[in-house]
Structure formats: C-alpha cells, structure tokens
Length: 269
Image 1 (spheres, rainbow, N blue to C red):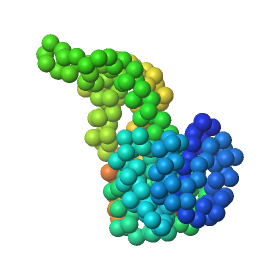
Image 2: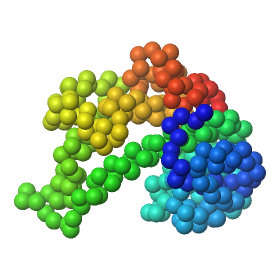
Image 3: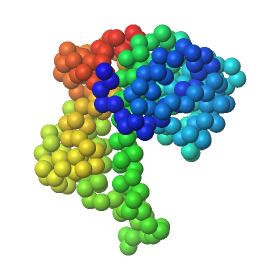
Image 4: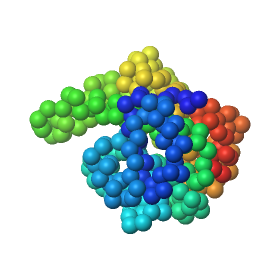
C-alpha cells in the first residue's frame, strides 16, 4: 500500500518513447486516483507539460529527438513548468549520469528495471514535498499589494513586509533547521532564535505546514538523504551523521518507514 497518497486531483505526466513498459505504473497510478498524461518524446512532453500543468513528471532519458536531459533543462527554464518536480526513469545507472540528471534539475533518479512500489513511494514523497512548498507560497502571495517602499527604504513586498508574523517565524525556523540539520537546536532554543516561544512556533508549523517542527525536520532529513544516496558514494553512517542521525540503524529504519526500502536498497535500485 502506498503511504501518504496525495489527493486524487494530482496529475502525473509520463514522457517515455516506450510507454508500454510503464503500463503497470500507469494502471497503479490510475487506481490510486491520479490522472496520467502520456507523451512519447521530449517535444510532445514539453507541449503537454505546458498545457496540462502536471503536478509531477516521470521522464525517460534515452529518447529520439530531445533526450531527457535537454527536455528537463527546458522544463526548468520555462516559467510555467520550472516548479514541476521531475523524476528520471532510465537504464543509465552510473554516477556521472545520475549527477547530470540532478544538474539539469531533476528531484530524483530511478534506474530501470525498477520495482513498481519504489516508483510509487517516490512519487508520493515528492508530491507531498511539493504541496508543502505550494502551501507556503500561497501564504506569501495572498497578502501582496501594489509595490511600495517602507520608511527605512526596504521593499514593502519583501517577506518580512508582506508575510504574516507566524509565517515569518516558520521561514526563519526552516532556514535554521536546514542549515543546522546535523545538529539542530532544541525547540525552545529554535523558538528563541526566531523571536517567539516554543508553543507558538509549534502552532505556526501546524498552521502553515500541517506538521510539527520535528516532523518537518525528519522529512527534510530523509529528502536530503535521498539526494546524498543518489549523488555521493558516502557510507551509510556518513550520510546518517550528515543529516543528524547518530546511528546508521536508526537512519535506515526511518528511511524504510518513509520510502518503503532501506538506504542500501535505494542506492542499489
């Protein structure tokens, strides 16, 4: 069963010149309530991404015409599609090719042949992450007015000028948590550093992100771990240390609970 399945309104665009190979994935996504769009090459994919505005794109690399790298690069330079998360699905499996994928803007890279549950787990994880960013963006955009300048000369449409005080606390806390992920401050200290108390900071995280500060930090740690597993040859313990887990076993347990596989299985996949 796929955990944390996003709402049925989510749309997945699959760009692959041999979509028959993904028939099982398409069927499972549809069964879970996703809408799926299919494109058979990069040019068609760009057009359908522009018109359909999918929530996530599964993209092959080896295609005639525009390959996956160039397609992703163009998606990330177009204002209307640059925020859409892209997951590469490819038979190319060496580190240099994976790194190139991340360089052109993908959020994840899965090698073929793959386990169906792995693709579904990663789709779910990245859609959840995308919803968090969208929720924050909405909170920032909603109070925007015509451009103005404050008395001290600052742009009135800066974050501190337009965002509610609670959202500013959340953003400041996020900056600290991401910068100090390996050894983050305790909640009371974190709240003090952003200018509030721990009870209010906890409430604001629930209001704007729908999760506690600990849940947010855990999610970001595991997303960072995905990136490190895909782009480095660090040992599991080194990755655990980098994201704030003292023991590799605890990290592996948390990773498997979140993504349905161990860090080693993720890396070897």
